[in-house]
Image (cartoon, rainbow, N blue to C red; front, top):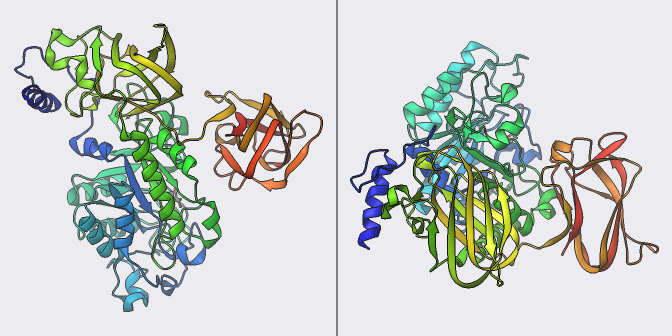
Length: 596
Ligand code: FUL
């Protein structure tokens, strides 16, 4: 009790980078560090995105701006329903598309003639921002807004005058609905109704946000609060720095390369952590036609591990339907997602463990290794200055079986670790390598095989300054289906001729519940769009499973495609024959296997 209290106090002092009176000084911060608002934001981990507007009623993804205001007419809108679902799903905040590219404002924006006030919805008296911000407050959620600078409706778009109109738009949305935790700026910049492209005045926009909402974290391709993760599929890089170099870059076409956004820049000049935005459906806006394409539980878990588990926030879009409600399919999936996460992370198998490090800063109890095992965010292990390689052995006090290893760096002192590995000790007392990785950051979750061990060794192999860790956990995920096949972790996969089928030989007959195909990153080399799939137990007699089947949306979103069979099948061989590919002569492949 006393020690924890002392730790908390020291941690708090250390967090504000002051010296502590406990003997040895806390480590000096390394490089840029998060502001208090960025730190609070990082701890939110998962938030809900709501794309809602005229597109919901026209099946469009990008409205033209010419839509009649009366198109927006939700029949039973209830933002309390959105908030209660988000809360039950464990989300910490909701971000709403207050204005998408079509320019329609979900609140009565006095500087626009294209808003809810001009619609007959609620006789022009409706205000989605009012209802949602109230609902968020009631449910203890934070409230955020997406406001697109690109405006296909505003006649001034493309002129200097528009920057002033947009400033007033921001003021009206940010000044009247209470605290806004995140301002989401899309970098899109197309032509306006006058045929002209706008030169955005980002300094003016940012200044306006900070005047009204000093605590808001501003999202864009280059921050300044947080950054786009470089894809709309919800995955951060295996390496993911919260630091980014932004000199010479701007949101939109002048953004850094998507690799930089995905991985950040080691030693980057500014603290701009990643946010992975992804929709629970193929599109961002609700469409009846996509009700059967809501992401599966295992896809959502995969996204969670690849975002929150890789030092990024997850912003999961759950678009309300034409009634103005989140539909049953989506809310049910969210509840499955939450209960799966609760189940996986319910028991930390390192509870009761003992930790010892090769270096403890100043030999002080305040920095000892066991600090990574408690639940106090501000108590941490730190090595001595100049010690950039160190190990911690966590003794579990008995054999434990797990397949997820969670680590946290104490980011108030910056992000330091660039390479690390984890070993486990098996029943014969032999240490075996379980995982090797690069960055940790606020949170890293390593996915391993099922391991049974009585001790875990964390080896920090390269750190830009003495390592500082504050969290560790071991978990068993029995829910995410195991796979067998192959995946190229570094995406060094093949490019094959379109006429060449992909054949998998598992070496023995197994029961498969589906299969997966992963194109190369960003679809390089092209990807398979439609295909035939056959299976066989002997490699001679083949049975057709699918003919001319589509990988939907694969061209825009070239990520791993997981297809579940209607019933399990016994097979040893699987043959995927491309019928149509996005590049004429070739297709890329970095993964192909079965789902079990
Ligand atoms: C993109 C937009 O163009 C999409 O419509 C969507 O809003 C997504 C979150 O950001 O850049």
